[in-house]
Length: 572
Ligand code: ARG
Image (tube, rainbow, N blue to C red; front, side, top):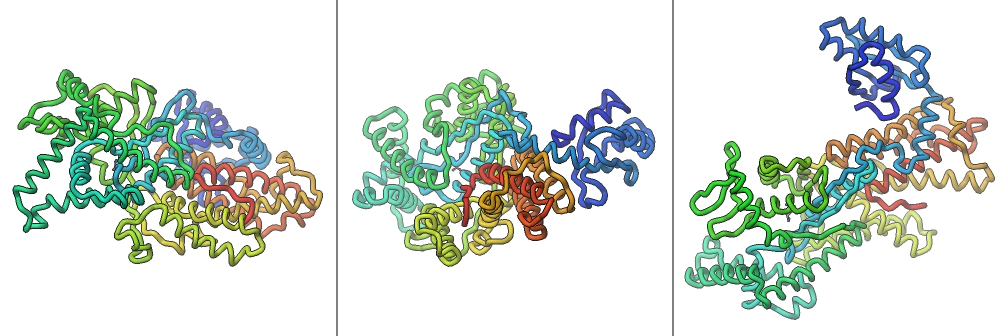
């Protein structure tokens, strides 16, 4: 990847040795003494042409001479080129970048639609920490795409159909506690579901009467079939279970600031799956096997219709792809779920491809979030309600705010604690590569230093406070045209700001929100080094330039924090 602003410079130089060559990757150097970026173009081209890479690199370096933008180009090692950006060009580029609404992020998504399938809990059950991860990670994936000009349709693909409802209806008829349902509907539904499981689990409860178990199972199948045929009573029960569940989820979504464009769960596709199976059969993709309909993919077998005629998760997802393509014609769909569903997605993507769907299909699988033993409230048994988790984070943040910022009015302290607590839980879901398992760690999440939400929010508040103090002292607001780099930390900060859009692009391309989180952290570190080493307001004739850098930081940092879904605070 070539940073967008450098592309024209490099393309021009590349054209002097080969007008047809594709300009490829530039990587930031680790050591500022070697320049700002390393370019492997000459090395790659020479290898392809069987030429001497060093000689080609030398010719290429010569073509940069006298060009604006590059202050120095030199050959390193066997034929790599080190580039050092020109200070005036760096300042002008930064000025342009912060003036743009997209903060320098290339608008590669213009005219393209992304369907973002995220959160997607199974109704009548508590949304668990896995769904919270999906919610946070998915939200940021959406923000990244929007920043690059994509049209994003956020779809909460809830699990609201199929056999669990037959079981629930039977359990409801047998064991319901209406008072409990009124007080905590999802809790009661979950209890009923577990109860049905226990009452039919012969393996674990050998004392059960096999005939009674068989009856329960038959009844449950019957109730599922009735629901799917549109039976009025079952339909009403299903609607109520679903609505009550969504109400509880909504409270979490409101709290974490997430919205969906559509909530089209599995039930929306129930009526379409027969047609899908027919279509797959006509396309010669499925075969009958012991009464079921299956698709063979190498050594994998995907069942699309079970023996009893019921559609599977795969069939539902295929119906859903068809529906989305017809309605939105998306260029891409991203599914954010637990990584343990990777095989399901690999199989169903392969089937969709064979069936003729060309949209890019991406499964973003995330690892487990492990909760610290005993640290969480046990009053709800072994299930943790997400609202309780958020409440706990906010309470912990509140204790810190009360201690450190006792002079702030009560209402402001409450708002800060809410933003910090909810932000800390969110950030922990984002900061590591999605595929890795993470362990919930209150101390690290809420630390004021290190790669945490409070640190990022605090750094931005610091930038704002410098601006505020400057305004109070009557210093005119800075012009980025006056940017100059007298000190390496000033230049380092400017370069880090300029690189932020590169991280957004990389995060988007690889569906890795952690790359955007890392870049935000690096930005905060560069700003804090600059802030602690150099006096901004007492900077003498460097003051205006430094203030301009603070202004640019504030702008890019606010953009970054919003991208990550953190609530920007004026002070904390
Ligand atoms: N409801 C599923 C779960 O809780 C996730 C659904 C993901 N989306 C999809 N189109 N399959 O694991």
